Length: 251
Image (cartoon, rainbow, N blue to C red):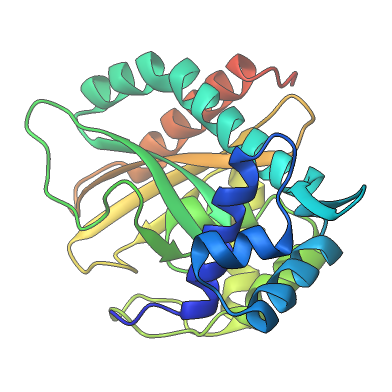
């Protein structure tokens, strides 16, 4: 895999700045990271504009970590704390339903799996912790998207490159909008063999203490024509409500 050099340099600069309590100068950045001054200046200027790093003007201009970087770090920490709180609940839920349980969060027009809990005899799925998948064909993604504001929904649809993964995959924005309306009515989403032909996943949104959708939980198992998916959907919705309460959301 080809690594983008500018992106790599940006991350290296952020690492260096974050370790310097008194800040670093542009010359120090160039010397320690062996980056040409013009390239370093362009990256640093962009990071300053985005409030990722601060400019400290003393005898020399020094750069220190900024508010935006701090907020990103806090969000990551909050996600870790949330996972620790919900872990025993979701582990028990996986055992109860005999299916793999996931917790995921949104990232742009995709979702990323933060944790995965399996029963004693799990079904092997392609989804693993850290992997990203599109919102439009996953129960986690649709469960989150359905309860976001209209502007966010339209922005996600605009960015989505719909692709027919199975015969059941939603492939148009209008079909996705209709599906989201159904999800809002019943309170849970289904990936009915949309991502993988042999899998059915059911997801429901998880809310934080401010009432914002912070993620979703789902159960995943092999497709069986005799399964009562409506009943399972209600179970997932109830468990998502339980997790939301753990995170401080009041219904």
